[in-house]
Length: 250
Image (cartoon, rainbow, N blue to C red; front, top):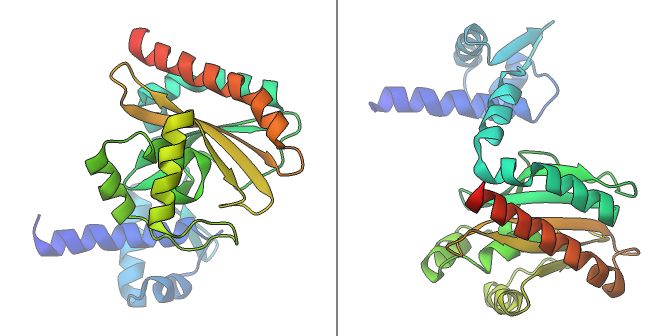
């Protein structure tokens, strides 16, 4: 792609990304956020409006529901999503907590599906949310089961920055944790991404033992005692196993 076209595409997505983080932005505000001239941003906004990807409400712009449509369509086309859809709700119902399906994409963990149990606390988790692989149970369950070469590549992409006081930021310590996860078959994070919450996750492996994602259940530390986690584990493992069977044979 010629440099001019490449620059144009990059700018478009910078603008879209900036808009996605706000509930409406004026042209000047947006121009400052993406460090581009107001006239340039205005031209890009008009182009994005013409394709239906940006809407204007009063004097402010925001991304349109077109992205919701695209995301939903992409999610439904993913084999693991259709394989786990009903079972994830079962995991949430039986544990009473929030259950998520996490996959790896571009070095990040991506929440592909979220289900809420009766006791679930409202957490910053929604389909499409991106989380660091090194700082949550689902991400670590995935890292523990990728090939050695892939693991090195993924770890090179991690920031290893502290998100909470309990975040593991030492790469060597993370490697030790991954070895433990491989041995016991599940991962735990005790407030590494969200302070005060404990998560437990089981990897979803396909017939060839390739990791495709992880099933994760999270709840308040006060409820997620060791005894309760042990009670939940069979449910989470069953959901992961059924998801694998659905992918392999259905």
